[in-house]
Image (cartoon, rainbow, N blue to C red; front, side, top):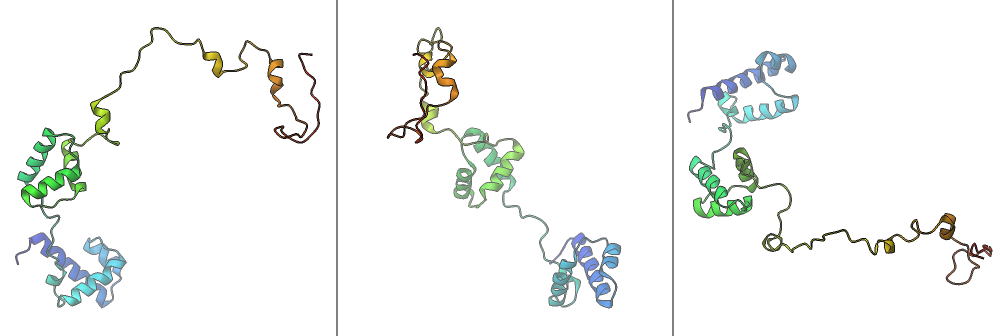
Length: 192
């Protein structure tokens, strides 16, 4: 198989690094001079791969040169057009349509990635239910504020003084059922 020149060159540099470490050179020094980016943990994996590959640089080539192109240009253009036609479609729905139409299975996350690159994503948050979108109840409009029963919600408002409210402490009962506490304190009636 014909490999790109850069891939072959990198495999040869890794082979040289492994041979230098095998001879007894310190790993850090050999790594710094080679210009490669590996950790000490990667060294054991690379050595095993090198030995399994017949101790040649071809054994270090894995044949992968980046991500595969599953979503070709034709499919991407269809995706963008379909999303523009029906903005409410979600990524899983588009993935199902894409699989039926082109026979290509693509993750919803990748579809979202492609749509984000073009600015075609749905707004964030949970979508509104169809019932809320179809019929919105009419809100009654009041010409003037309704305050006639406002005092019901605020007992002890300015109309009564602090004496009527008991000074902020609740009265202590005589211990009978329904009374708080069990002490027998007498409270003077302020109205008497």
